[in-house]
Length: 194
DNA sequence: AACAACCTCAACCGCATCAGA
DNA sequence: GTCTGATGCGGTTGAGGTTGT
Image (cartoon, rainbow, N blue to C red; front, side, top):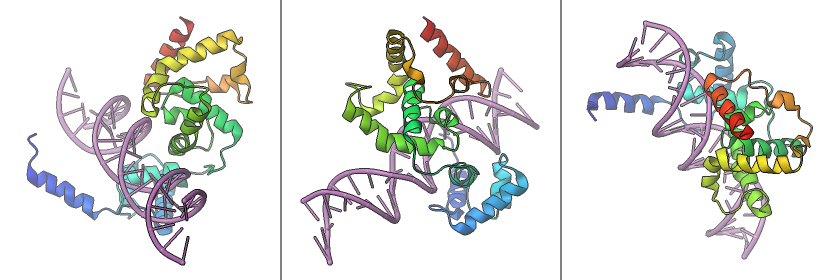
């Protein structure tokens, strides 16, 4: 590494100048004000103009996970839980994709909920995944459990996957996804069809 | 009542990807 | 085509709360 130490110390100093840890109500108010003025896209501008000693990432995260309108907090319903389980089986640890199918829920919330509730539940019940660790689950789900899902749905006529009342068409509507996601979904569909 | 163990969740970190120059 | 800064994502951490002994 040819990093010069002056550069590093500038970065270190900048880091030290930033607030860290829990957000205060006052910080929330300032951030909301700045987003109101500048929109919720230009985070470098927002971070500067808000007058907060917070980095862009921190501002964005706070907005996405807490301040954003229409956020549901806590009380994940049975229906939502069921959907999370199904989506996780299908998508693996792609929390943002899963969150996109659950209005008002954030990727962080779903990730936390999965790690604290569902992963254990699944192990207790032993119904979905057997013989692999939680850490392995994320990567394995991408292909192996998809295959399992495929087998299960074909044997049961594929009806069970729609047991909960979510809109299947909407669920598989990836029209708003990024090209890289679409590519992945296309691959998944090809894999399912094979 | 006191302490330890466990749980939850907000926030941070590092990396990957994207977009513009 | 390359570089650089911005953005987004998933994994991890740690503070605070809860439960068990």
